[in-house]
Image 1 (cartoon, one colour):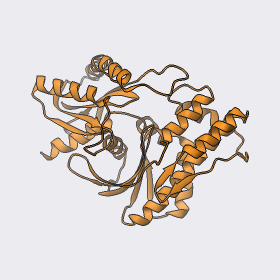
Image 2 (image 1 turned 90 degrees about the horizontal axis):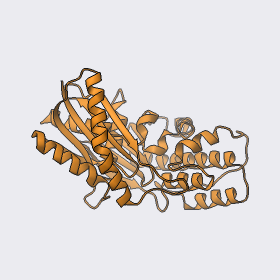
Image 3 (image 1 turned 135 degrees about the vertical axis):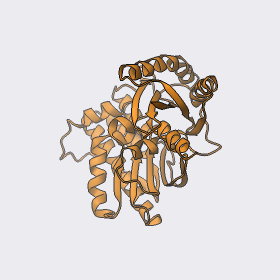
Image 4 (image 1 turned 90 degrees about the vertical axis):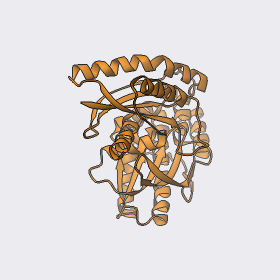
Length: 324
């Protein structure tokens, strides 16, 4: 069996993945979240880069062990790697140098081709991996610690042609979640723990946070300040957590409704990134958009693949090498 290796080294997770060259199906994957000390709001780039360099050989050994256990031979045929956050030449983050260096060293040793892509394209491809019906044109929302983008995306041979419709004007969605979560004593990244906390809230609570959206551009600095003030004044953490979720969902709804008027020919809206793993946000989005944009199908990656992973990167490489 021929295999394609996918590599992603984001600011939060080291990820490797193997897909079958015959059909693009996932064969094995491994990930390791970068450790952050309690109370801190992330890692410096130098720290994250060091951890990726340390993790990659260990994860490669784990990936090969999975393939051996599943009786899949490690006949590598190509490599896909994310080399920048977004698909623009000016987009840059040092952590991706770890994956890029590992990919080219591995490929040169075995004489393999390499597809270089962006982390953002990898997120979209991971979501599309699970879609039964794929369309050429989609509205895409990417929500993470470093991105709050609303885009229109068209599939290409080895990635996507993307046009930005709106982006975060200050704090990004993931930063909003993490800053409030850390203020409540949650570990970084705070998304999963904030979601669990919000599940205990009273659904009739009147505590709300405003949503600030201009066209497709979302702003979270004001809602974040309001949430932090509420925490300092002793408002129940469960109420604040649910208000953060509702604020994010309401902001998304406004941005997506605007995007749908700008790209009426788009049939799908695909929401990706770690923040989109939140089930309450997903449910609220689907319910509200069903009435406001009934012709737009809203899709998400499974929660486990909404967060950083290498499946999308490997899928893009599979698509590209198949077309060659």
